[in-house]
Image 1 (tube, rainbow, N blue to C red):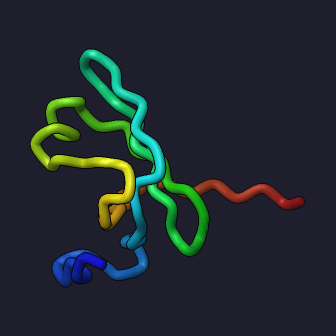
Image 2 (image 1 turned 180 degrees about the horizontal axis):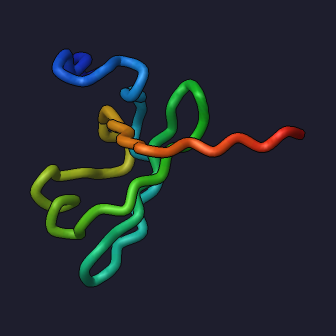
Length: 73
């Protein structure tokens, strides 16, 4: 697994493996399987290629959120 990125809060990092890549002309969806479930990222297809992402690649999903909503179940 990749190391933790120390400049970013560890609560916003999810280590995992690339499970699926849905490529588009400009953007692609990358599904990352983590111990907490699937995290999906939409990034440029150029970034997918430059990072050499493939199914099974070890990655860290970095989550940036300025708002979190909660609904009672």
